[in-house]
Length: 239
Image (cartoon, rainbow, N blue to C red; front, side):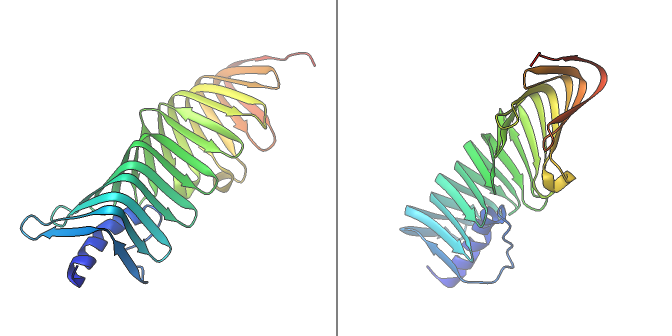
């Protein structure tokens, strides 16, 4: 493989590394390995396959069974147990597509893990420049103290915030909490000083056997308190 081919293929495959915060201007050594690497100058398509296709740059490592990149449309397609690892972020999926080195689509059952939180779903769309993800077809956010599921979920990674819509369900064993609603806005401790979840639309929260229902419920996760807005009802179980 000549140097020009290596640099061109790197520029595209780096888009998959960008999901973990790498930029194309990052300095450092680069390694790309595969059994075969081919380039069609007429179509602008290059492929790497055979064995385990591995791209390493600085502290980021991408692996998969095969990779294809179109230098003209800036579209990349990596398949076969795709995995991107960099510092505290890991993205895994059977296949990942990249567009314009910024918009990523991981499908076939995707997992995006950052720190102690894991975002999962049939398909995860991620915008690198905004550090923003959308999960459709059923989503699951797993945190150290609980699990939140919804039909659709948006994750604002830099803001430590998530928005779930449709069949929202929050379960926290440490807090003895089980809550449901039509929509939820979750704020992590980094976003609000203390974690909280704002549930709206047929909101219902059960904690320590006590049941609170209302139009909007705000659950403060650190001190185990719940505020209700609008018409609400509280049922307290005798201790």
